[in-house]
View (tube, each protein chain N blue to C red):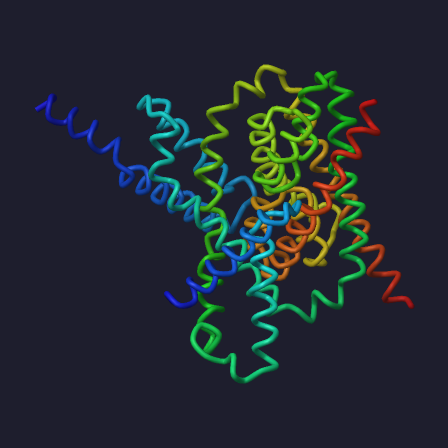
Length: 240
Length: 124
């Protein structure tokens, strides 16, 4: 019996089915808890799904490669979902066109702040130069950030970690912070979280308000572009 | 549904190909987003385009379906990060505090700039 259940585990753990099922199930539970708490920032489904699945992998001694063989089907949808942002953007085009000037100006201000502030805080905390280079592009989407990091000879893995941590922090901080400073304009709130916390921030924005989601998606796209131009320049100016 | 998904993938494919080919500093899907947006806007102008996925809200509902659970899509990559937390722990709380402080400052500066510019324009 024990032999059989072990061989069954060996079989299942090597198949994509198990890991895809676990990814969807854990998320479904985390999302229903998030709904039950009226989308409370602390009940962020990304955060809780990640640590629960991560703990499960550690307990079962499963490698990330094995897990990803199943989870990759979900991961793949990130690209199509980015393209799909065109739909709410199209629906809200009048609002977006009306806000084009504040968007472009706050894009430049926010992009520069995201890079400069991380470099200055990192120096204040006495982090080594190699780490600072890896943290600099932390506010843009992972693929772009890792490319920037590599071009600076930073550590792409550390960049990926800092991108995800930044996204989760931004998604959790944005609602209480904006409520505290009494900002009720969801265009501005969404745009800010898109600049600071890329896709994970955008996912949070869509949970709260569609207009916030649209502005967050635009900010994320534009920020990827501006940051890849600014980071090398900023790093040259700030670190030499 | 299948036609709509095909159109979305086609936009992404075109975006990826152009970004790779011209070495553009942006993700392929972002360019794909631009293509889909242009398609939707041209459809409004030319009735001939109003067919298949660009008809009867087909592409719209597929797009909204994909975005309804955007959070889910970040989980596979996020789990990979949990495995690399030792890179962060190595530097004590320095990295975490740096990231948190930077996020707060970035949110505040961006939102303040957006609102200030909006108000200036509204005044004029």
